[in-house]
Amino acid sequence: MESYADDMAKESYHHGDLRRALLAAAAEAITEEGPAALSLRDLARRAGVSHAAPAHHFGDKRGLLTALAAEGFDRLAAALRETRGATGSFLELGVTYVRFATTHRAHFEVMWRPDLYRADDPALLAARDRSSAALYSGVADLPDGQAGGDVRETGLAAWSLAHGFATLWLSGALPDMPELPDEAARAVLRHLTPAG
Amino acid sequence: MESYADDMAKESYHHGDLRRALLAAAAEAITEEGPAALSLRDLARRAGVSHAAPAHHFGDKRGLLTALAAEGFDRLAAALRETRGATGSFLELGVTYVRFATTHRAHFEVMWRPDLYRADDPALLAARDRSSAALYSGVADLPDGQAGGDVRETGLAAWSLAHGFATLWLSGALPDMPELPDEAARAVLRHLTPAG
DNA sequence: AGCATAACTTTCCATTGACAAGATGGGGGC
DNA sequence: GCCCCCATCTTGTCAATGGAAAGTTATGCT
Image 1 (cartoon, protein in one colour):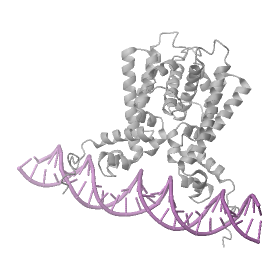
Image 2: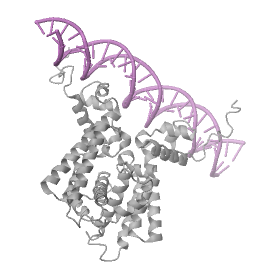
Image 3: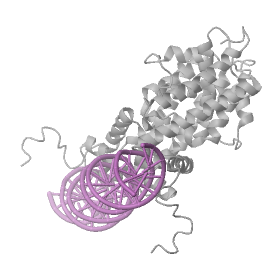
Image 4: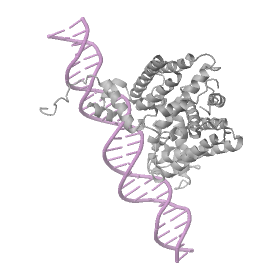
């Protein structure tokens, strides 16, 4: 009776990979409209399932955003580790951080809004710690003397600088800025003094 | 018939200063639960008015958040100008920025989320520019040679550093940090090199 | 083959933002 | 001193949303 309505749409009752599809749809929706406008029902529509389907995989909205944030921390940690291995440059670690923010905007925006997700989720906390570790490891790599007195303090300053630039760029507070501000980020990051 | 229910609650049909009351209630609610959980109807309840009263003053939710953000930029600009006048210290300007973020958390969080408000509002844009100007003026105050090559670039780096630290602190990403991180902010901000 | 259960749907409810239309009363114009 | 205008606030309504409950389908394990 559903003769011609299902060219290929009806991939059977089961979606196949709904969890992944919903996360992708969420990232897309957030990139378009911001996290505030996110609607579970809209995600369900985009994925072609009923409005209650997401609940099965994520429990509730917070659950979905928790998964999205965890995915973000995971990918960030991976990107940082790769940069560290490839260049070993402290500066480029910061550039990678900023580039991640601009190319994974939706993930990045959610990651730093713990009021949107379940901040005590174990998987998320683990991924977050992996990101921090990758970031601070860059400071530890610095030759003695350049690392300054306190590695933690220098790392925090570097993190703050990269994070602040990324955040301001995302918020649109910086006018006349190129679309992919790699070079601008590099210029700003050079203002960091390890020694303090 | 409303015998004992109105000790002093029923200040007549007209509230008197509903606009201000709603903004204050919004700041309180956001401080408690974050901007995502904000509900106009809850604000109306807190102020003791009907659920449609806010619309008269702000149009819609975006309008209210626009006003809140504008108020934030105004207060930030004032705080920065005062610090500049009192100390003339570049470093302390950053400390003031961070302190503003922690003591006016609700305002600060909304200010950098343009998806929550009307980013083209003239009053808001003006207030935002006043904040920027106050911030960059601190760089201009630096004695020649310390200001480095590019005042705008140094200003952006300083802004990024202060903003990043404030944002990370607010997001709870920095464990074991004192309640009012003035000293930690000062330590981090000292890692800025004007010359680059 | 058959059953336990994961994956999804349908139905329902409370809350919310927004709009429309009406009630109230303060204050300016005369 | 009076009246009317209109800013201010209320009541009523609607569509959309998040979430819960209960039912349906199909998958994989034995």
